[in-house]
Length: 278
Image (tube, rainbow, N blue to C red; front, side):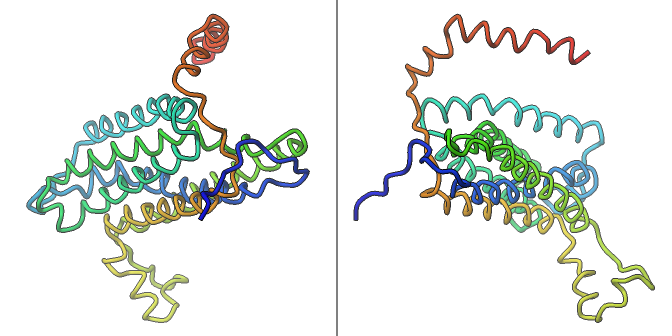
Protein backbone atom coordinates (compact mmCIF):
# COMPACT_ATOMS: atom_id res chain seq x y z
CA UNK A 1 0.00 0.00 0.00
CA UNK A 2 1.37 3.43 -0.90
CA UNK A 3 2.25 5.66 2.00
CA UNK A 4 -0.28 8.44 2.49
CA UNK A 5 1.15 11.82 1.49
CA UNK A 6 0.02 14.63 3.72
CA UNK A 7 -0.82 18.09 2.42
CA UNK A 8 2.09 20.47 2.92
CA UNK A 9 0.31 23.66 1.84
CA UNK A 10 -3.31 24.82 2.12
CA UNK A 11 -5.51 23.80 -0.84
CA UNK A 12 -7.46 26.46 -2.67
CA UNK A 13 -10.72 26.31 -0.74
CA UNK A 14 -13.35 28.96 -0.10
CA UNK A 15 -14.92 26.84 2.63
CA UNK A 16 -13.75 25.71 6.07
CA UNK A 17 -10.65 23.45 6.02
CA UNK A 18 -11.59 19.82 6.77
CA UNK A 19 -9.09 19.55 9.63
CA UNK A 20 -10.65 22.31 11.75
CA UNK A 21 -13.25 20.15 13.61
CA UNK A 22 -10.46 17.81 14.74
CA UNK A 23 -8.40 20.71 16.07
CA UNK A 24 -11.37 22.23 17.93
CA UNK A 25 -12.40 18.84 19.37
CA UNK A 26 -8.84 18.11 20.45
CA UNK A 27 -8.55 21.49 22.14
CA UNK A 28 -11.84 21.14 24.06
CA UNK A 29 -10.85 17.71 25.43
CA UNK A 30 -7.27 18.77 26.22
CA UNK A 31 -8.40 21.88 28.09
CA UNK A 32 -10.91 19.78 30.04
CA UNK A 33 -8.05 17.50 31.07
CA UNK A 34 -5.68 20.30 32.10
CA UNK A 35 -8.08 22.57 33.96
CA UNK A 36 -9.78 19.62 35.64
CA UNK A 37 -6.44 18.43 37.05
CA UNK A 38 -5.39 21.99 37.86
CA UNK A 39 -8.61 22.69 39.80
CA UNK A 40 -7.88 19.99 42.42
CA UNK A 41 -4.08 19.96 42.55
CA UNK A 42 -3.48 22.14 45.61
CA UNK A 43 -6.57 20.76 47.40
CA UNK A 44 -5.23 17.23 46.89
CA UNK A 45 -1.75 18.13 48.17
CA UNK A 46 -3.07 19.80 51.34
CA UNK A 47 -6.00 17.48 52.13
CA UNK A 48 -5.72 14.03 50.52
CA UNK A 49 -2.04 13.17 49.96
CA UNK A 50 -0.99 9.91 51.62
CA UNK A 51 2.37 8.34 52.37
CA UNK A 52 3.62 4.94 51.19
CA UNK A 53 1.90 3.21 54.12
CA UNK A 54 -1.47 4.75 53.31
CA UNK A 55 -1.39 7.26 56.17
CA UNK A 56 -2.38 10.88 55.62
CA UNK A 57 0.76 12.90 54.79
CA UNK A 58 -0.48 16.22 53.50
CA UNK A 59 1.65 19.24 52.61
CA UNK A 60 1.50 22.56 54.35
CA UNK A 61 -0.16 25.32 52.29
CA UNK A 62 3.25 26.95 51.80
CA UNK A 63 4.83 23.73 50.56
CA UNK A 64 1.88 22.96 48.27
CA UNK A 65 2.08 26.48 46.85
CA UNK A 66 5.79 25.98 46.10
CA UNK A 67 5.05 22.70 44.27
CA UNK A 68 2.21 24.29 42.32
CA UNK A 69 4.19 27.34 41.21
CA UNK A 70 7.19 25.22 40.24
CA UNK A 71 4.87 23.12 38.09
CA UNK A 72 3.27 26.14 36.41
CA UNK A 73 6.66 27.82 35.86
CA UNK A 74 7.98 24.69 34.13
CA UNK A 75 4.82 24.46 32.03
CA UNK A 76 5.25 28.03 30.74
CA UNK A 77 9.00 27.62 30.15
CA UNK A 78 8.79 24.42 28.09
CA UNK A 79 6.87 25.91 25.10
CA UNK A 80 10.24 27.25 23.92
CA UNK A 81 11.40 23.68 23.27
CA UNK A 82 8.06 22.66 21.77
CA UNK A 83 8.33 25.51 19.28
CA UNK A 84 11.91 24.61 18.31
CA UNK A 85 11.01 20.93 17.83
CA UNK A 86 7.98 21.85 15.72
CA UNK A 87 9.65 24.43 13.48
CA UNK A 88 13.08 22.85 13.10
CA UNK A 89 12.82 19.09 13.58
CA UNK A 90 9.45 17.30 13.61
CA UNK A 91 6.70 19.67 12.44
CA UNK A 92 3.68 20.74 14.48
CA UNK A 93 1.57 17.62 13.96
CA UNK A 94 4.14 15.15 15.24
CA UNK A 95 5.13 17.37 18.17
CA UNK A 96 1.51 17.63 19.28
CA UNK A 97 0.89 13.91 18.79
CA UNK A 98 3.98 12.50 20.53
CA UNK A 99 3.98 15.02 23.36
CA UNK A 100 0.25 14.39 23.89
CA UNK A 101 1.18 10.78 24.67
CA UNK A 102 3.60 12.06 27.32
CA UNK A 103 0.74 14.24 28.59
CA UNK A 104 -1.50 11.14 28.90
CA UNK A 105 1.21 9.32 30.87
CA UNK A 106 1.35 12.27 33.28
CA UNK A 107 -2.38 12.02 33.96
CA UNK A 108 -2.06 8.24 34.38
CA UNK A 109 0.71 8.71 36.94
CA UNK A 110 -1.43 11.08 39.02
CA UNK A 111 -4.37 8.66 38.87
CA UNK A 112 -2.10 5.88 40.19
CA UNK A 113 -1.41 7.84 43.40
CA UNK A 114 -4.61 6.41 44.91
CA UNK A 115 -3.97 2.86 43.65
CA UNK A 116 -1.93 -0.07 45.06
CA UNK A 117 1.04 1.24 43.03
CA UNK A 118 1.35 3.97 45.66
CA UNK A 119 2.21 1.29 48.24
CA UNK A 120 5.31 0.38 46.22
CA UNK A 121 6.35 3.91 45.19
CA UNK A 122 6.21 6.93 47.46
CA UNK A 123 3.11 8.96 46.41
CA UNK A 124 5.12 12.19 46.42
CA UNK A 125 7.46 10.68 43.84
CA UNK A 126 4.45 9.76 41.69
CA UNK A 127 3.12 13.30 42.13
CA UNK A 128 6.43 14.82 41.03
CA UNK A 129 6.73 12.50 38.01
CA UNK A 130 3.11 13.09 36.99
CA UNK A 131 3.42 16.87 37.21
CA UNK A 132 6.70 16.83 35.25
CA UNK A 133 5.10 14.79 32.45
CA UNK A 134 2.03 17.06 32.36
CA UNK A 135 4.25 20.15 32.29
CA UNK A 136 6.13 18.66 29.31
CA UNK A 137 2.84 17.75 27.64
CA UNK A 138 0.84 20.92 28.20
CA UNK A 139 3.88 23.15 27.70
CA UNK A 140 5.24 21.28 24.69
CA UNK A 141 2.03 21.50 22.66
CA UNK A 142 1.19 25.06 23.69
CA UNK A 143 3.04 26.85 20.85
CA UNK A 144 1.78 24.40 18.23
CA UNK A 145 -1.98 24.12 18.59
CA UNK A 146 -3.19 27.63 17.76
CA UNK A 147 -0.55 28.09 15.05
CA UNK A 148 -1.69 24.79 13.55
CA UNK A 149 -5.11 26.41 13.09
CA UNK A 150 -3.56 29.15 10.95
CA UNK A 151 -1.62 26.59 8.90
CA UNK A 152 -4.90 25.14 7.61
CA UNK A 153 -5.89 28.35 5.80
CA UNK A 154 -4.78 29.87 2.51
CA UNK A 155 -5.52 33.11 0.69
CA UNK A 156 -8.88 31.87 -0.62
CA UNK A 157 -10.44 31.11 2.79
CA UNK A 158 -8.50 33.25 5.26
CA UNK A 159 -11.65 35.35 5.72
CA UNK A 160 -12.96 32.45 7.83
CA UNK A 161 -10.10 32.64 10.35
CA UNK A 162 -11.97 34.91 12.74
CA UNK A 163 -14.92 32.52 12.87
CA UNK A 164 -12.64 29.54 13.47
CA UNK A 165 -10.70 31.20 16.25
CA UNK A 166 -14.01 32.14 17.90
CA UNK A 167 -14.92 28.45 17.94
CA UNK A 168 -11.38 27.54 19.00
CA UNK A 169 -11.45 29.80 22.06
CA UNK A 170 -15.04 28.80 22.82
CA UNK A 171 -13.85 25.18 22.98
CA UNK A 172 -11.10 26.19 25.41
CA UNK A 173 -13.55 27.99 27.70
CA UNK A 174 -16.20 25.28 27.46
CA UNK A 175 -13.75 22.52 28.34
CA UNK A 176 -12.26 24.44 31.26
CA UNK A 177 -15.68 25.58 32.56
CA UNK A 178 -17.18 22.08 32.66
CA UNK A 179 -14.11 20.42 34.16
CA UNK A 180 -13.63 23.10 36.82
CA UNK A 181 -17.19 22.40 38.01
CA UNK A 182 -17.10 18.61 37.72
CA UNK A 183 -13.64 17.48 38.85
CA UNK A 184 -13.64 19.11 42.35
CA UNK A 185 -17.05 17.49 42.90
CA UNK A 186 -15.49 14.10 42.11
CA UNK A 187 -12.66 14.66 44.58
CA UNK A 188 -14.69 15.49 47.71
CA UNK A 189 -17.13 13.09 49.42
CA UNK A 190 -20.71 13.86 48.39
CA UNK A 191 -24.01 13.58 50.22
CA UNK A 192 -27.24 14.61 48.52
CA UNK A 193 -28.99 17.43 50.33
CA UNK A 194 -32.27 16.31 51.89
CA UNK A 195 -35.19 17.77 49.97
CA UNK A 196 -32.92 18.76 47.09
CA UNK A 197 -33.28 17.76 43.45
CA UNK A 198 -30.71 14.94 43.65
CA UNK A 199 -32.33 13.38 46.73
CA UNK A 200 -35.62 13.06 44.81
CA UNK A 201 -34.06 10.91 42.08
CA UNK A 202 -34.42 7.09 42.17
CA UNK A 203 -32.43 5.53 45.06
CA UNK A 204 -30.09 3.66 42.70
CA UNK A 205 -29.04 6.93 41.05
CA UNK A 206 -28.64 8.70 44.39
CA UNK A 207 -26.59 5.77 45.68
CA UNK A 208 -24.33 5.92 42.62
CA UNK A 209 -23.81 9.70 42.94
CA UNK A 210 -22.98 9.34 46.65
CA UNK A 211 -20.70 6.32 46.18
CA UNK A 212 -17.26 6.74 47.81
CA UNK A 213 -15.74 5.03 44.76
CA UNK A 214 -17.05 7.81 42.54
CA UNK A 215 -15.60 10.50 44.80
CA UNK A 216 -11.90 9.77 45.19
CA UNK A 217 -8.55 11.18 44.03
CA UNK A 218 -7.95 8.37 41.52
CA UNK A 219 -11.29 9.08 39.79
CA UNK A 220 -10.82 12.86 39.99
CA UNK A 221 -7.35 12.59 38.42
CA UNK A 222 -8.33 9.72 36.14
CA UNK A 223 -11.19 11.43 34.29
CA UNK A 224 -8.95 14.25 33.00
CA UNK A 225 -6.59 11.53 31.80
CA UNK A 226 -9.43 9.89 29.87
CA UNK A 227 -10.22 13.21 28.20
CA UNK A 228 -6.56 13.73 27.29
CA UNK A 229 -6.54 10.29 25.68
CA UNK A 230 -9.70 11.29 23.76
CA UNK A 231 -7.99 14.52 22.69
CA UNK A 232 -5.00 12.56 21.36
CA UNK A 233 -7.23 10.13 19.44
CA UNK A 234 -9.22 13.00 17.89
CA UNK A 235 -6.00 14.68 16.78
CA UNK A 236 -4.69 11.44 15.26
CA UNK A 237 -7.97 10.93 13.41
CA UNK A 238 -7.48 14.29 11.70
CA UNK A 239 -3.97 13.55 10.43
CA UNK A 240 -5.07 13.04 6.79
CA UNK A 241 -7.21 16.17 6.89
CA UNK A 242 -4.54 18.54 8.21
CA UNK A 243 -2.06 20.65 6.33
CA UNK A 244 1.39 19.57 7.59
CA UNK A 245 3.89 22.41 7.22
CA UNK A 246 7.31 20.69 7.01
CA UNK A 247 10.03 21.64 9.50
CA UNK A 248 12.72 23.88 8.03
CA UNK A 249 15.68 22.01 9.56
CA UNK A 250 17.99 22.97 12.40
CA UNK A 251 20.48 24.98 10.32
CA UNK A 252 17.85 27.07 8.54
CA UNK A 253 16.00 27.59 11.79
CA UNK A 254 19.19 28.77 13.54
CA UNK A 255 19.96 31.20 10.68
CA UNK A 256 16.45 32.66 10.86
CA UNK A 257 16.50 33.01 14.64
CA UNK A 258 20.05 34.27 15.18
CA UNK A 259 20.19 37.26 12.86
CA UNK A 260 20.01 41.00 13.38
CA UNK A 261 16.48 41.45 12.05
CA UNK A 262 15.05 38.78 14.34
CA UNK A 263 16.97 40.28 17.27
CA UNK A 264 15.51 43.72 16.59
CA UNK A 265 12.00 42.28 16.33
CA UNK A 266 12.33 40.40 19.64
CA UNK A 267 13.75 43.51 21.32
CA UNK A 268 10.86 45.64 20.08
CA UNK A 269 8.39 43.10 21.44
CA UNK A 270 10.10 42.78 24.83
CA UNK A 271 10.85 46.45 25.51
CA UNK A 272 7.28 47.41 26.57
CA UNK A 273 6.89 44.34 28.83
CA UNK A 274 8.33 45.86 32.07
CA UNK A 275 6.09 48.91 31.69
CA UNK A 276 3.00 46.78 30.98
CA UNK A 277 3.80 44.60 34.01
CA UNK A 278 4.05 47.68 36.21
